[in-house]
Image 1 (spheres, rainbow, N blue to C red):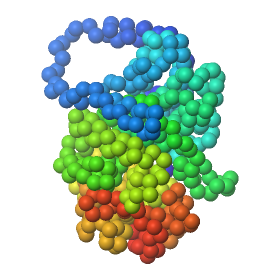
Image 2: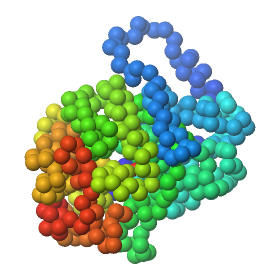
Image 3: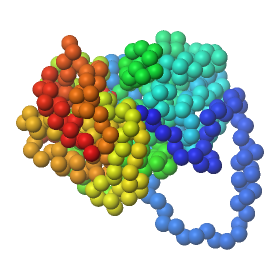
Image 4: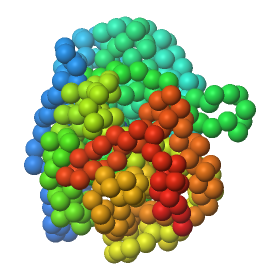
Length: 451
Ligand code: GLY
């Protein structure tokens, strides 16, 4: 499922990388801006937008000896490398094509100020590009820049850029430190936290062979995650809603992750969140990262034998989602409370975003959970209403026969001995692993999202 680049705008980063930096350069532009600011008329009175109160620091230990520092606030991306760069060292900045320049240039200027040699590698975000070829391109940039073990890789972008850059950091010289600056809500609350890095591959060179998501990767923890709320201001509504799907996922299992109240908080604050209130968004990001940090610190490698699945519980809905999200020819109609969803086109065609597929996967899991008496009665209906209000699809048209979708689910990494393992939302906002669920339950769950 391609994650679309942001809408073209005048100040977006082109697909071609900016030139390398060695020392401060962009002074001319700053001067031009200053000259243009001659006093003319008093500025219009504006109600200032509330800012996230302050820079918030969260630290968690994904594994002994490692620590991930998380910074949440406004205008923080320029600080990405602070305290992590060697004097006279190098940084490779991996960025999403199409990011607003205002998110990237201040970082490059900050690197110039510290005398850091930098180079930029641009990634066009899509599942097709989350590939070995993109990984090799990033590694070649690092090699050309003669980066050493003590140097730093900094990713600025969505989940695709963060995942591939993280894998490059894990592999280059057998591991260099990296900083992730997620610029989508989904990457802030999920992809950037916990050290999962990966690319997709196909099992054969046949053009029609399915893309196997995240099949090749490594656990490599970022030294720092920088969540800059300014990035959310320009995020297209569809991508923002897709990020909320991962937060709803956390809400459904908050009781197993030390935050049983998250779902109620999400329900209460949904209007502020969909209106992109920056303080509510910063709270949302902090709360979800704390939750995920607790799960990852307890079970970094997804090896927990606990009935809630340990880290595996974070895959709630994903076995269904991965089977659906790369299917071609799907379409959906925004439904439910159109006051929240009105920013979306009435009918959306084409591949789903990952978060949209996760929303559908959560519905399938809730449906299966109710059938198996694991989930509370009525969960699927209340979840459907919530996802619709957020502006997420709750049914899709164009799904192939459910048997076909169920076959694709076998490719899931949680499959053991050819048998599916599903994570289901259990009573008390807990997660529960179900081994080899009955086929008819899986089929009925898929049918529940058929439009
Ligand atoms: N996205 C699920 C995990 O990080 O484990």
